[in-house]
Length: 290
Image (cartoon, rainbow, N blue to C red; front, side, top):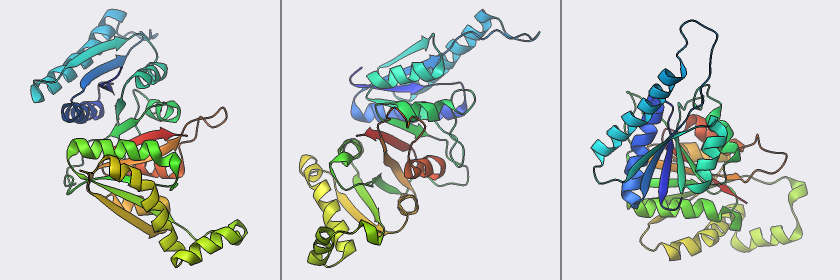
């Protein structure tokens, strides 16, 4: 569904926060907003269990509350809703595949929350072929974003980072803010060195200048495509997760990559992405790439 941001709702405050963020983002980008809730009647053998009609009314109420909330904040926004008669994970994966962006609520700080049990969002992230953003409510003792920028982690300074950088630049352009491209590097083990790599490092004056050169080269086409977006290049020695989280304090959005799943790695999201999802203080966009 081109030109659409989709939000998966589950009736929690976390998903309402996700709807708020998605509505603001859709307004900035000039896209439509789609609110969905996956619901299948689950009969239970207890006296207080609600019947199918009551459960359906509750599910419809989840969509109605979110729609009223976002249309009140953004009166001109095109908003549609749909109750999906399917299990949560396959329903959300299908929605993600046809939307520009899927937005879900997140508890953050150690637990990524899904629809009911906390596992749905992680399962969707591991399998989605399009970008997914996890949004969590701010803590009361936590100030809002103080730095007007989108931070993007560039783990591999090569062409595979293209989709991740494109998402970061498109978002920054919509927000009218800058991009901070963060690349962490570490001293490679001796057996990983080759005469060619040693020559390249010596030619530019050492390992860190070499990493800076690589980052500059991978950013060049995106600077040319988005000349209106200011870019800050941040290269630092250390753990990729620690460098990214330290650099990304108080920002509007953190963008990280995840390799497209293969037949044997559907459970993997990567250590840096895992750290960002659990500990970042801002919304986190996870962008699949080859």
